[in-house]
Length: 249
Image (cartoon, rainbow, N blue to C red; front, side, top):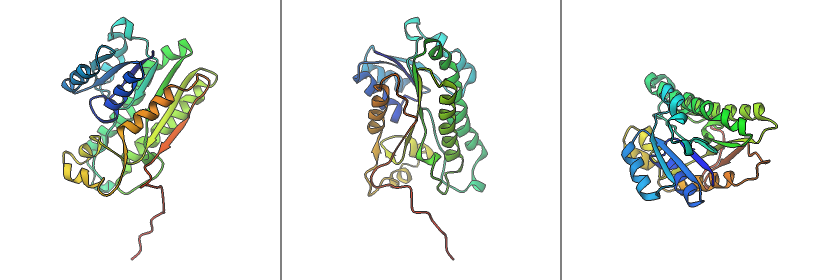
């Protein structure tokens, strides 16, 4: 049984991770800002789920988080840096700088602060796994992707650079890069509550699901200690990375 810390566990990927890891026989620390959602998840999953309010953009809260846990929960075997978001699909010159700052604070700063809070104990034990939620947007640009895609490109390079530091140690790091995924709040949040616009992204296609991503994370956690999966990219069969687009007059 591993103790697995999941950020952003109030919905979507995070809730799916919690359910899958509990099913696999692990203990999960589920964090997020919406405490009522966490309480509902705890009622569903039982005593192997510990919940705690945490906003990953609050640097002081992140720094104090591990010592604040009950002593039996302080050894983190797996960190899942899941909390993340995007806003809008408009062009960069029309984007709200406050939205850009929120994306950076969550997708980059929050992720690195959580990693720094947990990594020393993993190195001291010579054992641990960090799963970072990246995106195919970090590899393949698209109109309106600007700050979100750049933040996920950071996640990829931060992940592989962590492995450069960790070479020879049994602390593993994987960048999980999903493509089109439905059944989460990601697109609704991106369009600031416009559910119809969010739903239109998934019309006529069969995207991946949060459960597909959780199954992948389950497989990663089950790998032997000597095996590091640097990066895993997945898309539904309705999606591909090309062709390149050329705008013509």
